[in-house]
Image (cartoon, rainbow, N blue to C red; front, top):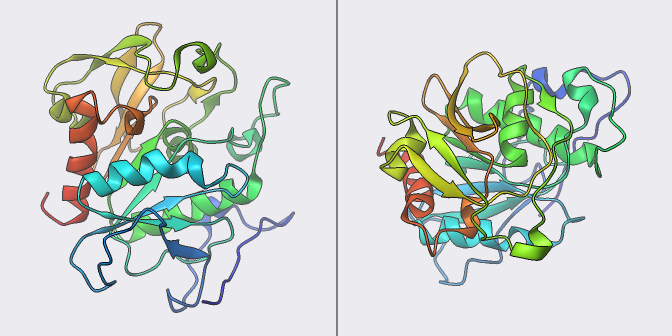
Length: 266
């Protein structure tokens, strides 16, 4: 499989407004069916395919919980690598996962000294994939960094540093605090209640909410814990539900409802 690439260049157009490139989805862009697929199903099967943006710098195992959650919900995960130029036509939904900090220059700010590692190739690729998913009216699920990328892509900004919860002490499935959920939101429908316990390990968050998004969940400290689009195609959370699907029904339902939308059921 040949691979194309998209790289940020000084003076190039903002990837948030870059037009999609017209080319064959199987010969353009760096993408591959996820290694998590082990059932031998052919590519012609009816299961929806969910693209997950990944970074080799994080390593494959970092994304394993996302793949497992997508598979458990009835879909096939497909890895997209930095440099992917075109969202494959076979894709039915886009998942933007957690990961590195977003480059503050993308929302017009200087980098705070406490901003962590940045992968600009990944930033640009995710912005481009998000734009193409929106043009195709595909459902999008954003998790942690993914929520932040969505907000930046649509014109919002981020809090560059919050005191993070220490996962080295508690683990990734530790329920750190309670968030209040809007009952009518997609997250609220998945949860079935207006307050839920969530895990938390992030040091950035949504600051200025982008046009076209509304807040669906709020933390005890006022942090934006969930956002959704006015057209219902975007659902994003600041926590990490991929780590909670075994123990908490709301986390499992969130992925199931996302996959259902990708299947065209909602």
